[in-house]
Length: 127
Image (cartoon, rainbow, N blue to C red):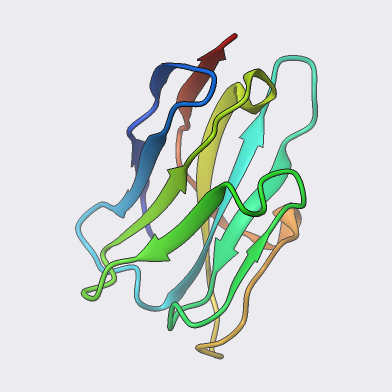
């Protein structure tokens, strides 16, 4: 079992940037594919981005493609979501999620396939 902790959220003006971090408490994230999801008030939790165990494969929602970048550090203990050119519609609670995968290249975009979730970090983009 892995415990995930997100950080880096906050209030930013439209056009600004934030970097979110997802760390595993007390262990490496190497065995896990990791994804970011977000949930705005009154809306379903939606997929944002995912990265394979190796870091070689990534996937993005169309709404963030070209603006957000997901990455994982060499030691693979932290996964980042770099968010540029933020828009008010990006306002949401952002969650990271992890799931064990054998393949180092698999990416997972389906919410129900993730077993482990963090508590979330609030991102608010003002217009």
